[in-house]
Length: 130
Image: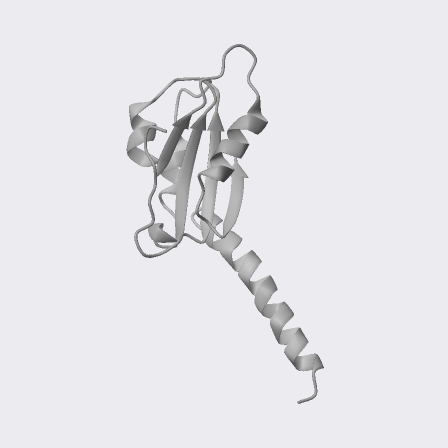
């Protein structure tokens, strides 16, 4: 672990795990994920490199940076598991590390999970005759 996120008072709602295997030449996904319409404390960015490469730009932008030290053929599931074990979010998503993310990406995840939960509570309450 080269850099480790440590939530001070607020546990993030979302942990975003991004995987690389020494194939990325640009790291724009981090830029897009840092331009979200929710406060940054609501989510964390976890970068998992399957091999040993540590990129200064990634260190500067991701909250957690981990290298797995794999050799030869890579095993993505090991990287995903390491990301999961080092996440703090209530919701954990595994995303493509070279995608372009809309500004409402994180907020749409939060709304999707929490509105479904609120709807279940509301429906349950409405079906009870108190």
